Every structure is written in structure tokens, then in C-alpha cells.
Image 1: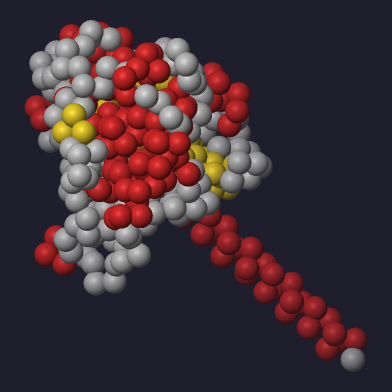
Image 2 (image 1 turned 180 degrees about the horizontal axis):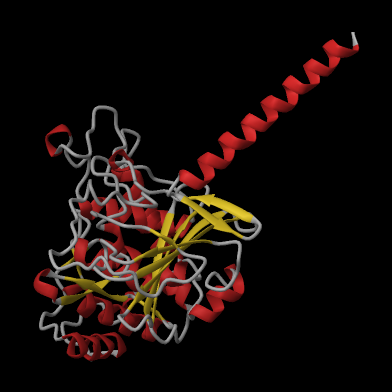
Length: 372
């Protein structure tokens, strides 16, 4: 009897031993494991292209299997309304009632009782403001020679907010101006009876009023004080992308789910050849699936302007969140709720001259290669 018990116990120990060996093999042979002191986090790469599909039958790699459920002007309008509610109140599916959505926006604006006579809504001329000056300085730095309509309209909106702010706080002003900017024709002229969202002016409202409505930290230091020192703390997953598809250069990404705020955060630093951080972009996902996109410049100030690559090594300036919404969305429903996009689905490729060299790596980085 004793011998049988001993054999049973030895068999049990042998099974435990085999399990531990298999577990260690999985850990040390899986490239997508990030080992941090006190924590292990699995890398999300490679991303399944189907993250960009909302409906059954959609193949994100075959544009012939889907079509945009709604125009982008309407999807941006839905996004603006959801930002105000801080949840996915309106969905881009068969349940969407455009009349209800439009009534909601009009009611939100009317409730603030901001008289249009106090605001230069119909002015064709306006003073070039701080955003245009910031844009000009950045454009000169990277030799970018194009003007962006969204920047011009965003400056116009800033002018209206400054006027409104004399009697109302800026959050009230943004809500009061929402309908004028969503349903705008040309340079801010209301369309009257036929309400059709204007994509350019809606993007301008999102770039300026989105951070105000969401009460985003105005500096990177304020962001870190609230959500954590992601670049020094040990409990954030950390990836180094020597050649990022989005930036065609070095990028370091930090990821964490914060139980206190119930949000998933991805914070991405763009790195120059000397490993200096030139900008920090943040993607924040709430439990409802609502995504927020914002960025900080090299000095840590909240800004809607970001630098992106073009062909032949040139660079361009794009406006946040417009620049983010063009990647983080479902191809069929056109809802902006894809946390980590698939570069395969977006058909992004590295420039032919992309280097295999790893630079800026530190001991906490897990190196992520794209297209290699």
C-alpha cells in the first residue's frame, strides 16, 4: 500500500515537473512576451486585419466585401456627440436614427443659450491665431508647403471661443457652438432647413473642442500626474518599434489598463535619430468602447498638430484627432473604435530604405518589427 501511494505521489510530481517545463518553453520561445519586474504582458502583435470589420461578411483585406455604412461626415458627427456624452450613445449600425442624432446636437447647442450675435460666426475674415502660427513654424521646420483647411477653421473656432469665453466657460461654449460647426456650409454659414454635416468644420470642432469637452490634461506632466509615469514606471508594457509603420521611424509605445479610471491607455513616443522624443500621442479606450485621441508636442504641451511621413522621405502636418481617425476605424461601419490598427489591412508598408538597425533600445523594451 505504501509503495502504491509513493508511486502515485511520484507520478503527480512528474506531471508538475513536465507542466513547469512546458510553461517555461512557452515563455522563452514566444517573441510576443514582454517581461517586466513583477508583471508579464503579452504583446498584441501581429494584429488581426479583422479588427477593422464590424459586420459579418466583411473581409478587411478585400474592399469588394464591404462599403461604408455611412459617410465620414456623419461618422465624425456621431463621434462628436459621443464625446459630449463620454460614451457610445449613438452607434453606426441599423439602430442609427439620423433625426434623433441631429435633434440631440441642436438641443445640446440650444441649451447653452449662447446668442449668435455675440459670436463672429458669419465673418469671412479672421485674424490668424496661435494655431496657425504654430502650424507655420512647424511647416517651416519640416519644409511643408501646404495649407490645411482644418487649421484655418480651427483658428476661426478659437476666435469664437475667445469671444464666448467672456460670458461662458469654454466647455459651455463648445457645446453651444456644436450645431453651428457640424451643420456648417463654407466658412461657417448655417445650411438652414437641410442639415448635412460638414466634414471640415466638424473636424475643426473635434480638434479644438474635443480636448475641452473631454477635460484632457493640458500638459504631458499633468497627464503623467493623473494616469501614471508611464516612461519610468515598471508596470507598463513597453515596446520599441525601430521602424514604425505610422511614423516610418523609431517609436516607443507604453500600454496599460488603469483599474482606477477603467480605461486602456496606449502612449506612443516618436523618436528622432538621437532618441529624443519629438511628440507623444495617446489613445484612450473607455469600457463603452469610446476612443479618445490626443497628443503632446516636444515641449509637452497639448496640441492638435502632428508630424507624419510622406513619400520619398518628406514629412507632412496633420491634425488630431483627424489623423488618428483615419486608421483607428471599422471599414464597414466607419466607427472609430479600433484600439490598435492592422497595418496589413491599412496597406501600410515601410519605405524601401528602412533600416534594420535597432537604436534607442533599453532593457525594458520588447522590440517589435513590422514588414521584416
